[in-house]
Image 1: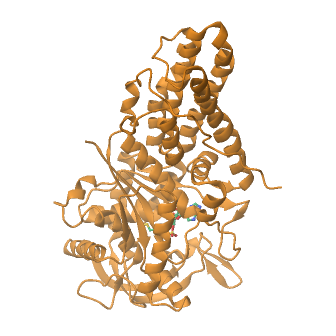
Image 2 (image 1 turned 180 degrees about the horizontal axis):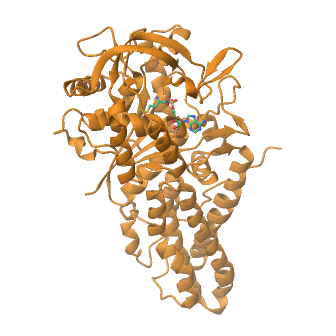
Image 3 (image 1 turned 180 degrees about the vertical axis):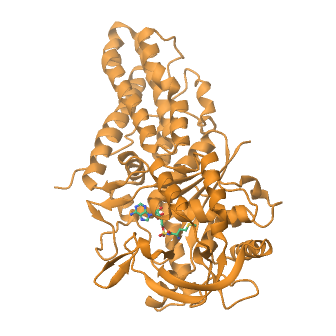
Length: 508
Ligand code: MSP
């Protein structure tokens, strides 16, 4: 069986989850579900990043012990994952023993290969990003220096272990060239290339001014730099350092999904660490864009961070999942506006898809005694209608393989609109008296089309599409992509239809 390994970033537990976190994991979930539908054995990993200065400080601010604090916040990410319907196979926490063991094993391997040396770090550090910056990257306002992310930086001076990153510069450039799909989209790839070409310095990979981290083996005055610790999670979960582990077959990961803020860590440091330990690098890193809220940056200070749980409550889970991936091209920045969600829900889900299903299934109930008409020949008009539909699974598969979620939904809904055109022109309700045979054929064709839409939409809207497949009489073991090749037998009894989506009143 083909294997697929997909990951989300592991989220910092300094604060409650918001819509940005839900977004990355949602995209990963949709691809994981698609691959399973396509017969792959999938390993989908998510989790929380619990060490470092930023989390330690958040715990202090909350007046809590860091472990108790991370236990609590990590749970809120788990709750989010459950409520968003994510189908992850593992949820990793970096404070788990398995992860500490993997980090220490990787460290010792790098040390053994002389990729690490002890030195002294002096430079700029942003706790918010947990990142080191060169002076040339900073801007100064009112006497405070800021990183390009907007995070304030502070001067750090402490003993530190270094990773020989500079040594891997040429190797990285060669790797990017040989693997043009490693970084997507192209704009991000170009940024990374120019950053690496401008020259890499060795990377500080331990800290001594605080203790909340994985202790460096044989030198416990140091804790590992949180990004070395965090990135390692992707191999911890695959069983590292045990290459005989059951899950090691999944490595290298097929896609690491990340936001554009953390591309540098995933596409420069991570493959370099791995190459230095002679571990295969991941196949691809996709960096999506940034959500703003009603035109404004989402931030703690503005207090406008959107709680995904409240949105689920308000609009329902599947309309939210649909909207997030439909509204904005995956890879671009986008704005979260409630009016846009309402418009998509009402126009595309309730009107185009919901009404099509309801009209078709009601006519089968009323005019065909609730029994699916037999498989029918296609005339020329039907052939034209089906050309697009027959190609849909392959087209959607190609678009998802390129992480083009919005285009996948666009082609599906173009096909749904074509079916609305077909039902209007064929007018099966009028055929009852004039040509009952043709009426049955048209309804059967519409049913076949709906089965395709429901099947390919399952990864996006699992609950609603399960309900639609129930209404279409498709047995649970016939919901894979491959099952589309086998038509349902004529005469299958269909349950009376009920509405799939509700229209939302726009707020005035
Ligand atoms: N802990 C690190 C990642 C380590 S991975 C080995 C981290 N965590 S984070 O909690 O800050 O989450 C960052 C990720 O959350 C981003 O890369 C992105 O995937 C998502 N988002 C956070 N805010 C976002 C938006 N406003 N918009 C879209 N996604 C955003 O960085």
